[in-house]
Length: 337
Image (cartoon, rainbow, N blue to C red):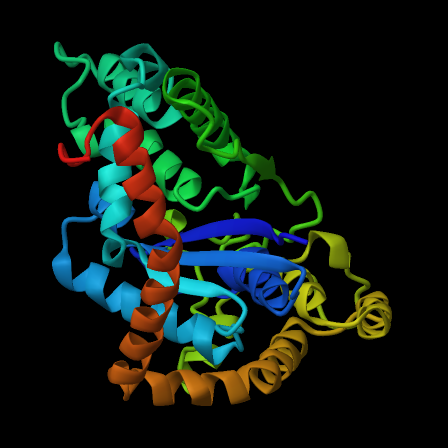
């Protein structure tokens, strides 16, 4: 029986934080141990260049994200874990797909429309000011990421559903012209995926500068936990856990029994300082072993590189023969025979 192929990309522009872990990394690593599934996980460094033109940041983020996934127990025997730029067939396929993609479809992409709208609202005479072809063609590159490995399912947030629909449109158009080559992917939106609040109570996000990096050194980690915004209720006054950032973070890590116990402590009026210290100790215990593995990996980037190159070899066992087939289908092939 052929395995279901699931594909996830991680853009290499930042440092993994608690929200990334709960929302995407943890479920993906759990899925990597499911031998009924063939997971493809990649570091989307070409995508990173669309928004980030700081070479050192892209490189450092690649290092940190790869180390994070490996430290947390990614099963690289079952999963294919690779760097996007190590698979030359992705860029080649993006060109083949671009040649069958209507510009009108790209005009409707959310990111492009948002950039145009921002220009118009600011009074710019050129609606395309600041829009690069990388931003404009982003959905085609994403389609190439997905279609190259004939992924059946792509876990995404609601804001990414359009890109999966576009990948289906683009793959379907190619199939219509050149024959059935691509599996049309299905977006998988996890309704139960936890969205963590950050230091200021808003969604934890790099864009809000309110994140708690996953593997900060212990002292810095505690310092950030202590900065989490709370209300002014005094110790002994009952507090509502469901509106509290501290509780929402705790709940994402704890068992049902542990959550119920802490709910009672809120009803009893736990002091904010006590809850912050409790949360720090709980999370620190949860992350200490993985943090030690992470720190060791950062000191041995050659081990990370070896894992990525091994993943690239596995990925190219799929991508190289497939693109050779696609080249032939569009008429790019040797003239003899």
